[in-house]
Image 1: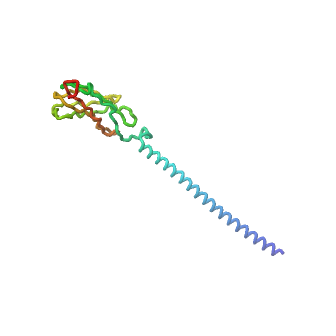
Image 2: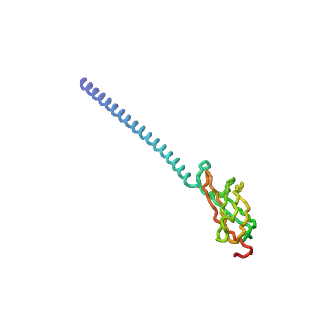
Image 3: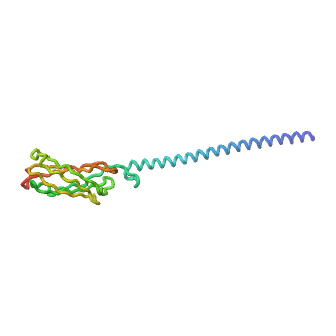
Length: 190
């Protein structure tokens, strides 16, 4: 009987030790798996944050309405007005005014301190190209406005005035629609 007890005790001890070894091995696997899952979760969260950050940057860089203040994207301005006074008829050799406003096409804010040049050309065969004087370049004021004067040619006919902005680091170049002026001695078109 004593032998049987010893054998039973031996078997019990062996089984217990085996069970402890198996449980600790499984526990090690479980903690290893948990650690791997935790690392995978952390990597996924980091990747998601990077993707969100990249997505936000791409959104800001492609849509002007969401662009951040420090993200300058080159875009087009526009001439919101180009007026000639008197208009549409100017007497030969008489002076007339050219006024306009240059604005940011996206924000509609004025484009200040920018140089505007002019294309002044004949729009009819009656006026020779050499009969037109050069219109001096103008700088826009803080409101994006510019104002200049020029003389009509000596000959009756039609002339065209176009304002041109050559662009900058932030803006593309742009030209206004041509403003046509009738040069005539009468108040009626020729």
